[in-house]
Length: 272
View 1 (cartoon, rainbow, N blue to C red):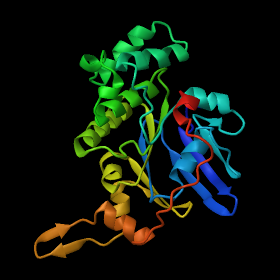
View 2: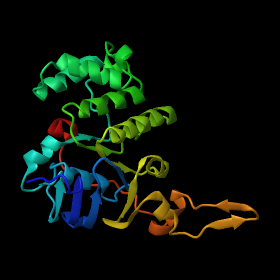
View 3: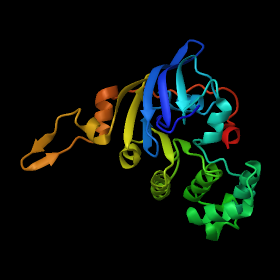
View 4: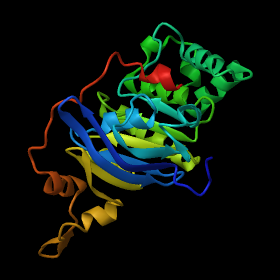
């Protein structure tokens, strides 16, 4: 049974291999309720594999993980009730309008008054004026905001954002960043995977660096920066950037191979 004192997410010794490829080699971390936790790593580090395990779409080979106090292996239905997942690419129906996308998901969630739910989320994500337009006409940032809004239908306490700004232009990235900050301010726990150092630096309360299947450092931005000495030039004090910390820990030639994927990507449909 879930307890309110437990961390929103707890991962202990999780391992996963695809045939001879060991993707996760014993991952450990905790995410406090109402916080933004960034899982930072290069392509192929195991970020998406871990998110798929936490969202019950993939079974771990070893270790244990809980979300909202529910074990992902033994209580997958309870975990699914507590989470929502937004994948790397917006999973909106481009033929439907923005409002129709939201109404559809609200009906699938068996919520009362789906229209009111849709209108509330359109207002919350500054999409009211665009609600009657087909989603295919939206900009990248608008489409991603709609995607996140769809994920929040039913008020899940935990949301997984798997590289939410992939392929977005700088302005759209800022729009998504603002949305993520608002989620955390409203009490939602956010686990964010990213390979963008500035994204983790801007958003996260805590940052874990995943490299070659293990967490090699986990801390606040200030704690990670203290891993490198401060540099001084004349009277100017220079703090090490997160990029310098990351490259010093994993090396400049981190693996860039894509992670193995099993079957078609049905991430959005499986957890909404």
